[in-house]
Length: 230
Length: 309
Image 1 (spheres, each protein chain N blue to C red):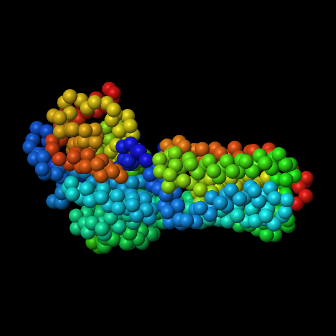
Image 2 (cartoon, chains in turn blue, cyan):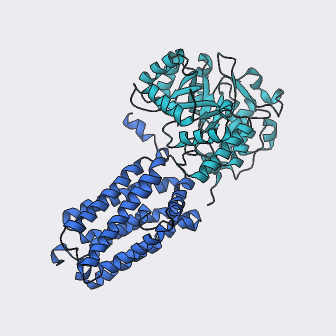
């Protein structure tokens, strides 16, 4: 097709599903996996607390929980539920899985888990607060949009909430790895923003917006890697 | 979740069939309210109802059991109200699987005029694509196979012609939407022995009236019309407005009938294929399959009225 031909298409032309079907995905995954979503909530709350620990082992566990959350939201929600009705979601799903593997690999082979949230105590608490705000507040955007509390988009299951909280860990990774780590949530934010705009699900736009804002704050609040002592 | 009709009604198509002459001035003739409006497929004695059903977006519900059951009820209402032609495409995600599942539950394949599309850039994969779609729909063969949006049309059309000659499909055609590639579309209509075309036409998007619809009449090609509600946006713009005083004379009692009867009263149009996720809206759509149709002067008044709002 010519360039002019493509210009005749709008964002809506690439959306093959309706808002009702998309919002039902959250209801379905919560129901299908019940009661495991409760563990996801617990994990989301534990991660920042573990990262503020003085000992390295809890911080290692925190990164492990975050990496598992990325894998489960990618493979579970995006590949298993969203992909069948929207094929680009399959690619993003595998991207989330790779992102989780990357974080997990860093946890296992990257030496001592970073203590950078502790290097600057106040920044660490800010980051922990932002994390808790993300995992406790953002899940309700899908509820606000659908009017159904069973559609709550939990950390570790819903990619939007998981990506938004997950970017707060980017500042804990060394240079090259942090940019690699941020690629998936960045492009996911652009893709999901375009999707939500086309679906006219205005509440859901809060998810990509939050992800981009939290990415910026993660870098502003995290002390430089060079000052980290592990 | 509260969804308005605009969100329910997303995309649709019109199948083009030659009008029976008795329907050209249907409002002045006698069309019993209990008899569905049908159109003959040009060159045949086969008549199909003038309102079909599209599946773009609306039937792509994945593996959601509740929504599959709900869409099954939409399809049941469509059949119960006299519809037969269902149009799909492998491009529409899981829509083909959901249609197949709904047909299983309803046991209604004998009432179906099955229309789908070939949608692949691999021009040697026409037969495989048709077979794959057949398995998803649960049909041995399709009544109509169309080249989707002219994608790889040269190779696909050659194979479709061969398949028709072999009796593997009854009718073949091409599709476009949103008014795209009309010049190339017309050239194919002039040269190729196709039975159907599918294109966008509604009370606001009337470009097809200039060339494609007259050409379809001239060449004896059936016309399926998609996006009869402009992807649902016509309801967003006009549903709060009153129908004109003379709407009843044109056989119209609501906006769905207004938009659909405007389309199927065009003499070149065979069938319109609105899509919906709602049983109630399906009933409204199928209301356009009955009663009087606007005549030529009333059609002009309908277009003028919409423009005046």
